[in-house]
Image 1: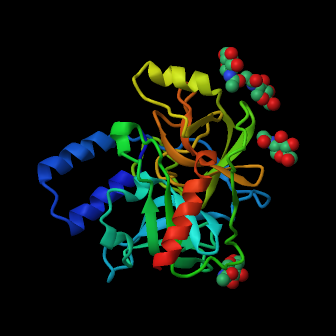
Image 2: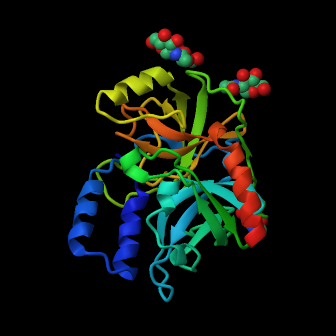
Image 3: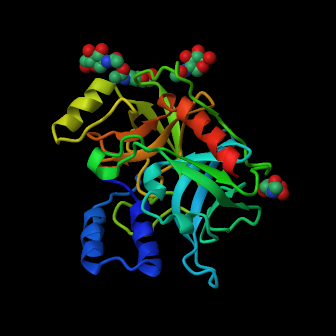
Length: 286
Ligand SMILES: *[C@@H]1O[C@H](CO)[C@@H](O)[C@H](O)[C@H]1NC(C)=O
Ligand SMILES: *[C@@H]1O[C@H](CO)[C@@H](O)[C@H](O)[C@H]1NC(C)=O
Ligand SMILES: *[C@@H]1O[C@H](CO)[C@@H](O)[C@H](O)[C@H]1NC(C)=O
Ligand SMILES: *[C@@H]1O[C@H](CO)[C@@H](O)[C@H](O)[C@H]1NC(C)=O
């Protein structure tokens, strides 16, 4: 199961919250089995990557150390989408603090290119029906409002898939992320943004192979696989793009770049009303 965000969040909790040790240990071992990105390529000039941003956290405000938490996608000057599982375990006051921010206008999350723009979080909304791993990450979507607008030359919003968007089997899409690149090494995430070319998997096939291990694939998900390339740990929350449209959010999967297990993405075409409703309600309060 890939769900990279959780590791970082445990780290955060270690610093900021008194979590019972026993519980922590249990959670940690559960997420130890996480597998990492294999394959992929550095983004090409003609890739539609400008909407991809990283979510970064900084454990100590007095120190420079930063860590990659997740990916996200710009959908408007002030708004972006990520996965609910990226934020759910983090206490509200931390998400809205200077410990966490979005970094855009760059393909390097770590600051090795100087042109990055950082954006603190003004408000956010997790999906009400997101229940986490016990519900197989159903409704894995979250909306973020940033304090500083996305106005950089390399910060461009992407359209979201509408209700009528059709996910056609075996058509190609691209997924972007800074996730781990070495399946055998912890903390091997990529400093430079990478892209993986993937194809939409036949949905009933995807259902069937997951049924065999009692994992639910819901109608709010879309499956896709690549040839020895895939999204993985650390790519969570990032964009899956087809036809200049955001059609998926990196959510979960059994293994990365496996011929047997496709990656599972949040099916954006199920959420345009939710997104609009949340934008309206958050706009009122901030
Ligand atoms: C964004 O990046 C580009 C190219 O690296 C740079 O020219 C620009 O000044 C940066 N900042 C903004 C706000 O666009
Ligand atoms: C999927 O599309 C590719 C390229 O168009 C083609 O080579 C391949 O045979 C197709 N696979 C299936 C299962 O239809
Ligand atoms: C998926 O594949 C099955 C057989 O392998 C086929 O019957 C079905 O029509 C396919 N589903 C879609 C949506 O193409
Ligand atoms: C992409 O858009 C073009 C033009 O609207 C359309 O013909 C094509 O079917 C779309 N491709 C996919 C995979 O949806």
